[in-house]
Length: 94
Image (tube, helix red, strand yellow):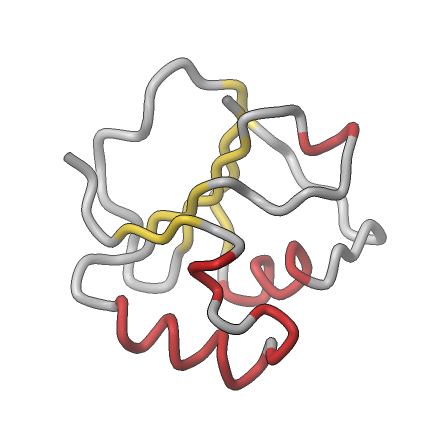
């Protein structure tokens, strides 16, 4: 798996497939065991995102922010409505 810690602006770049921005993906074997900070989103891919333009298969958002996150993505990304049809969204690391 490949992991990326991003801000909302970084997530905008991912969804818009903005390849002008250089991301530093981290290869991981297990999901992160900690929660993202209130202003962070963890994005996780099954395949190396440097070699493709696919969306992450999973995003982990701060605990309790699901409604806010879904509303935000619905407002700013109408082509990805609902976001959960394209990306699995969880707000708690087990």
